Image 1: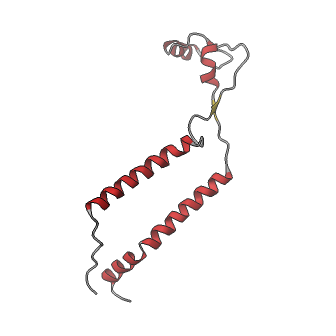
Image 2: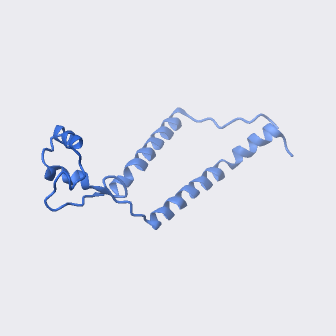
Length: 126
């Protein structure tokens, strides 16, 4: 059997591959933000008549808040009491698992012939 020769790709094909990968990468990073699935999902838990003590802030932390421009507890309470929402969505997990497994199967199937050619070249027909 002859040595394996990978298929040649034109410059335009290489540029298109890079552009498609860039679009997919940016899409994978920003699509969850646009769909509201990630990001600033914080919910403040306001306190009636907040004080620094009620917000569990010591004098050193109070000084740091003052340096940031939050001189009274009422102005800083929304930031201090905000908590991330860690709710879980089983449907989103299932969709992600199907996409990851589907991508893996697609990659293996699309490159099956090339894998077989390389293995046959390296290890011979067995």
